[in-house]
Length: 216
Length: 225
Image (tube, rainbow over all chains, first blue to last red; front, side, top):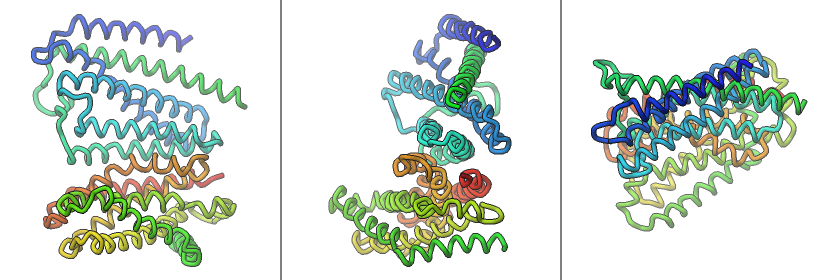
């Protein structure tokens, strides 16, 4: 019941987010309408990284308390994080074609984000390949903790290696670089995608619980 | 029995097994030699092109040898049903990780020294002037590779397709180490002093510290039955 309510709220929020991004937000002066993809592109990476933070915390807790429910949360957030990071990479690629003139560039943030994507995809692979579900949970937990702590190192090393992407506009010190007319739709979409991700996670956790019950 | 002694016993056991069977080392030496042929075939005799890509080739060789060698870390225990033996070892289980890691470091060190020597002979490059700076880069890079590799080997020891999954998991995790070592080696071979690659050495040291801490703290969870 609660999950369903969350689902409906998320649906409304996503519709509102799309409406705001396409209708309310101003047309960007140089990039034109292509820039509107940012309202999906940027919030999806925030949601994905947030999901991975939950994965890492849940994994650490699981190794302590060994509750199957904690592991299901880690499992579900990994999947949802990978999904949203995939959306981020795909939309970035679609945006890159008209803006940079190429689908893919070996730029610092493109590269580091895709490495994080592969890392957490690997955790899902590892779960699949390990036969004993309890061992799979432990291995995936260790890998998720390793992966989460590795994120900073990956970003830093790839940054020094090469940079083309525009620097993050929002999280830097100094006067705001983004006008409110763009920032507000961005935050609304962040909220909408966050709700959607939360809904996916609760749904996935329930499916995983049902699967475990059926197999037991 | 102290922690260090328990780690030492694992190291001594692995080195003794390796000294008598020479299974891994023989194969790795042969493998590295073949890599040199492959590099030569794909790049051709052009000297200039070779110098440009040499740092990358060198670390490609180390990483490929590492993938083959490190993946076998727990093979003996698994094949001979000695996994329970490790489980029954008294005290902190991370001592086993430290011992296994040390054995892998010895193995990787031997292979790397050999590959370096072979490179100077077969590709006619003079590593001499840069060698003093290369040693810390090699040491930090190898430690990072082996620390993650030993942990991941335990992680994939009970997986069906472990020969496939081990490199698939380890390679993306090693991006910081790979970039750091290749970039630092590149600068050093071009004649830059060690100070100019200080930031890479710091990154490598940070990566080593993170991998070691995660390995020591989480190893026991991978070991249990």
